[in-house]
Length: 361
Length: 208
Image (tube, rainbow over all chains, first blue to last red; front, side, top):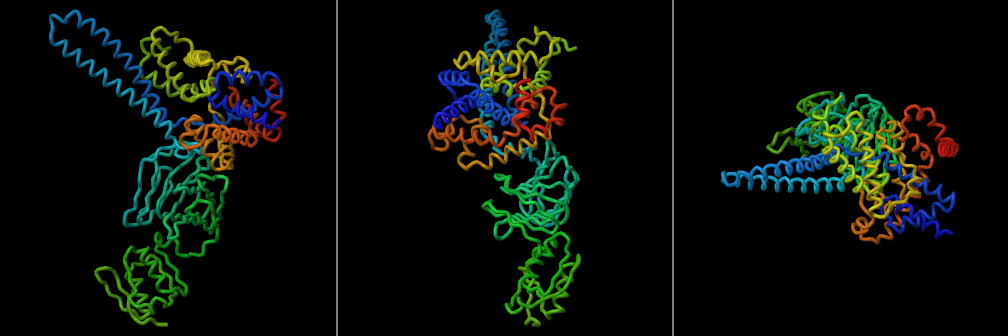
């Protein structure tokens, strides 16, 4: 009985996926019409199949290609009619006009060319069909990515078409369409950025970075896709976001303000903690808080914020502790405070700024 | 009213863009093969273009195209000896193509449910299912690509569909609403009933 039902399940699936042979179809027909319960099973699979197909969408690129294919078919037909006409004309005038032979040859070349174009278009269309990735299903990439915003060596602020404000840290790249069409606003990020997302409940804002996805309704938060351990970090300042992996959307985490999520490179864990780093946004705000912080950590942050190479020439100095708050100050004024507190010597070498001294504790 | 002389390439293009996706779904429901369905729909548009001077423009294009596509599908099934009147009758296929886009909210929920259900499948099974349903690869092509037997592909496909059938069972009654022309009225009213009492609905609609 069990093997029997598997046998007919296979047959039903074969039928709906277009794999059934004429013999299979006869067999299935006999089985289905034999019993009312068989009929119900068949119909349930049919509906499942329909449901799966109902959410399939045809990407606009595919539609463009299909139209190109149709157009080439029509143009071919048109030109063959024209050619037939011109060959009649040529036959009549061939004795009188030697030039017409050349014209005839030319039109043949054009005709052959258009055939090649038609075939290559057909080939391209088939290739595109095969290449459509599965995540179209998730309505991702509903809109084509057109613009690349890159911050280069400095921190830059951009306003996206929906009013979302993005601040990109040096080296970050954001890919974003020139216009958000479709059901969601999709962007791709590599690097560190701060988002203030414009509120639009109907169109969720989705940030993709590799396999990781952050879905937002309207909120502000920080993303870093370049961490040392190759994890992706999201820190939420306000609102609500959902984080998940593209290939596993059922496993997701919701963040509340102050939460930090880490998504691992191999894409199977989401670690949520509360954010302890007061300076995570210093690269944007130039607001830094140090509370009994070691000098080497301070310097590491200064390098990030001011994009200047800073060296500590004495190891003992690294362990010196600092408690201070800086707000939108220049590097020079920050260094002057450090110099006074720790009794440092500061030297600008060609390679960067060198800190030396014995340290105060 | 459009006149025969005005039927130009622009009109064909706009008709194509409007009707192509729905007609492909329509053809697919008959012939079951994506590639064949697409070819048939392409041919239907070519024949529309060829007949543009003689066609009766007072009748809607939609019904003309649906009829042409349906006839081509039935011919294809007969020519390949895959025509089964009994099965087609059971499938209760529509007479004309339905282009109505499903309700956005419901569609979104269903898409999510499908995505989650796919994610629940074992890795291999998931890969085979996605290659077949969303990349339109045939069993043989999948077998070649993954270096496995066609029998394995078939077993995994059955496994996947059995799982989808169970996981989507709450939504199955909806399919009738989704494809019915008046779903805009019915869907919001009946949606909650449909999810909480699927069987009631299933039988009600099946009998009605």
